[in-house]
Amino acid sequence: MKEFRVRFAPSPTGPLHIGGARSALFNFLLAQKLGGKFVLRIEDTDRERSSRESELNIFASLKWLGMNWDEGSDIGGPYGPYRQMERLDIYREYTQKLLDRGEAYYCYCSEEELEKERQEALAQGGNPKYSGKCRLLSAEDRQKYEAEGRKPVVRFRVPEEQEIVINDLVRGQVVFQSEEVGDFVIVKSDGIPTYNYAVVIDDALMKISHVIRAEEHLSNTPRQILLYEALGFEKPQFAHISLILGKDRSKMSKRHGATSVVQYKEEGYLPEAVVNFLALLGWAPEGEEEIFSLEELIKEFSLERVAKNPAVFDIEKLRWINGMYLRESSVEKLTEQALPYLIKAGYISGKPSQKEKEWAELVMTALQERLSTIKEVTEQAKIFVGEEVTIENEEAAVVLQQETFPLVLRTFRDKLVALEEVTPETIKALLKSIMKELKLKGQFVYMPIRVALTGQQHGPDLFLIIEILGKDLALRRIGKRLEKTMHN
Image 1 (cartoon, one colour):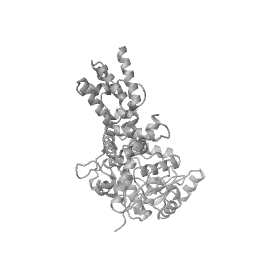
Image 2: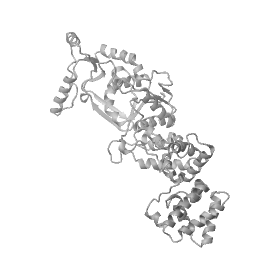
Image 3: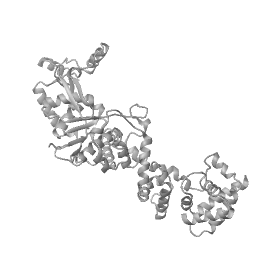
């Protein structure tokens, strides 16, 4: 049986897009499942926009998501080079073969001539395709154009009246007619191959067995099929996965959420949650389960369950999935991930001491059940920092007006002063003793103290809040609130 070989071939013209990451994931999962090879090829023929910085971003983003490749521009492999700009001699060799056989030809038409042709075709309600004007140029015509300084492109001579059939593994049979295609450019005037040309040669020579990519490439496939046939290459199997749309059913953009993988990392999403979410964009598992580890995805994933319909990017679902992973994570791991955010917010120093790390771990223990992303710790941890307490709303302000409010705070202050060790257990006992002493129900003790200490009616466990604040800060906050109450 032929080796299962797939590739992800991004253009390094910016950070890895979430749609590209989903395509890479589907390829990676199948390669892992079927014991095949996952190839990372860099398509850098857009010389103006391509950069090594973008290439490194793509590498880092894929590695962060847990996708490692078997062959690529950074690690090599048996079918390199794996950057297109390092393969120009290979493309030239095949271009010459096509020219020699008359399956390709030089075209000297100017941009203005081509645009005029396009506009005329559109005006007549036709399909704007190249007329074939340079198909039968004589040697004299070529010499004349070259004397004028015209630099030709190379066009592929599309066979006439040919049915192009694609047996797509996701979309089923898709049929195109060669008349719809028109002779297309395979090499630009600067000698750089076009996408449709280079990708065929690369996939064939790298022995790619399956091309799994976004639906937007389906319209390129008939051109590529014709090139496979002309060059005598074995065709791979194609699978075109659905587009990703925003919740408003328009094409995914920044208004639907971050568009690059690195932004999700910066926003405090866990890589395993992003992978889980991406897998569900266009693929449906057999059961009702929605939380999958990478190992489970490798076992469960198949193209048979990839939908034809567009996938909808729902940021709230990603937040929900991420929250599920955060709650399953160890506090130690979460603390390590939260430290950069706590440092940036100025809550702890740039090089945290052991005491600061212990404080951060307590904060994550208190907030773990409440976070959807790690970055949210910056906002939610505000209640543990500083002397000032802001009353969050009118409902919380009403608590301050309770008749027993000053008495509860004074009693709590006095008992806290006398407390030798502040732990959740000692605080719990202290609060119970207040309820017993003042003959008050829990809500009339817990709520006033919570609002006085945090300004909020809801939040983490009160015992943990007091432990995190520490005895001194808690006493100062209580003192300030009592002072304000006396002056009102």
